[in-house]
Image (cartoon, rainbow, N blue to C red; front, side, top):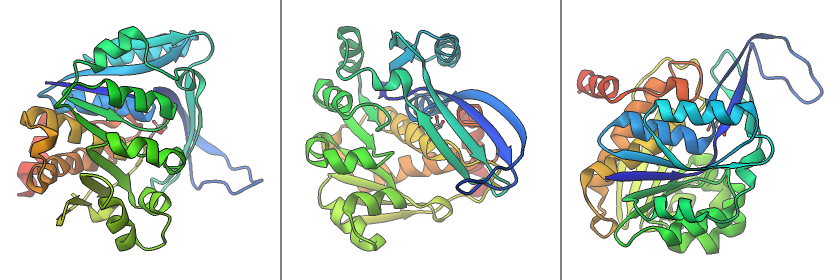
Length: 309
Ligand code: RIB
């Protein structure tokens, strides 16, 4: 029951500020912290802490000190990093500002994440063992395409089109290999190139077997063919929303793997159940600072679900 995440890993450098500065403006921060991040690595940590599945991460770190720190951190979580390559140069870094309302701005300098255009032989072997392949777009599109082609028959490809700009350019290439597309509302509008949410959902749902649109505090919408299932959010007092979407995706993928079902059996009930678990985990994650640091373990998520029933 393996979840394989192909994606980015970053050292997050996070400043807490009262408010996010505008262009040309300087503000004083109240604290600075460094922690593991990157959409791919955050999703791997979320999938692993969800329990019920072996998790492997495929990506690249640099030859700097951050590379060793990021690798060790994933290993401590019990994630298989045999597919984590080391490439000459710096690791990925994200400069993040988080304000008093828990909103953030993020600047990612990809470093090693941009270096792999194709899977290495070792990475291909890892992907060939997947039951669920989970990808995003902080790595080259060609790597995502390669991974989708390398997954075994019967394995799911869950794609989180974040950030969405590369997806807009490469949609025709990527869409045929996707079983479940996960986007937030902003990404849905950008990819569908429309201004209205319902129109975006209709346009995207027509192009993939299954679609999940996350809507922040309004929950998410699961669409499989003609069937649409709204999944409510859990209430939470947010202090930092960084990585909340990644937590949702990682837990969602772990639940699909644990179900033992194949993409041909996908139905809205199965995907909505996975989305409920993802929603509970992301609700907990926003109550804590940081990306990977904030990802909850399975017992905490189960408790929240029980308390909310
Ligand atoms: O989605 C949150 C992540 O985006 C951060 O951890 C940061 O590294 C950027 O990749």
